[in-house]
Length: 442
Image (cartoon, rainbow, N blue to C red):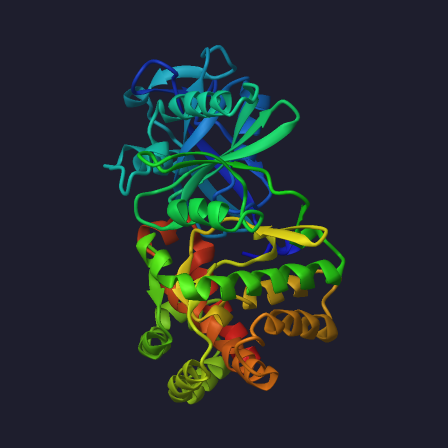
């Protein structure tokens, strides 16, 4: 998703359950017997590099985050968070090691963190990165994979992200950088990423190695820069056109994508999902920080028209194809006339024009945010499809899809598991936010 406004972002207060490297049930506390804690600026809830860096700086320990335990609501500008960490190497840092059963914390937030850690927990969908010992095994595989490729051993392996969707490590070796990604059993990203790297070299991150059993990928760094850091609209236009070209090339390969496990998000099913969304006051967060009464009234007026809009878009004749599902400019890399796309976690077979909205919104968060530049992106994207449809037909399809792509996002975020949304509240918040963006495009 797009970055939050730092002026309105809460402070995160992190409490840590730091596991002893060799003694089960023993965790690190400070001299007063309290859980270690510190505050940081707000970051994406999957980002953990700053947590490990802070632990190294404050307590002299090398750690990785196994899992987040809780994420509170904002109170007085502060969000209480808690995490379980694994320690690597000697336990000779600044913490005191105590059996967890001997701790009787006075602080209510410490008690809540310990209760969340002690609650029954089972690994689901092959998310082994949440278990102690996994990081060491992954490091061994990374080193052996690089060795087989004739590359030097890694100089550093650093955890960047971990959450239910994946665990990402940065691997520095020689003068190069790679990224290791572990993925759950439930999803098509592992298979689709390998397929794209082989079928469309240069359109996705280069593949250095893959382990089918564990769903591990080792990917070379994409050339160039993330699109969100580029202030040249011509580069945005090139990347947008190349994505459209990729979708057009994949329109005849949907059987292959289906065989890789890609789900299908049919336009024909969207109206029913929208009806359920419109009736879900909790998801739209009425009376909280979600839709206003005026926005709700407008949504209910236009709701019955959305089925017709979906049908008209489908009838124009642009075939379903690969749809990234999360095409924010941070997931697009540009290098001259080339571009590549990463993080295919939400990939699906769908109407291709459901993709473009995040890229346009991302442009609006930059110095390039003008109506003329948005129009240029849309024209470049549309031109990829003018080999199968007239320019007027493509333009009409874009106009029809503009609000539907945001409604599609709202429906998908509404369907997130409650256990995941509790740890990542921005998923909950995105439901009314994307509905509001859809209303704006109408």
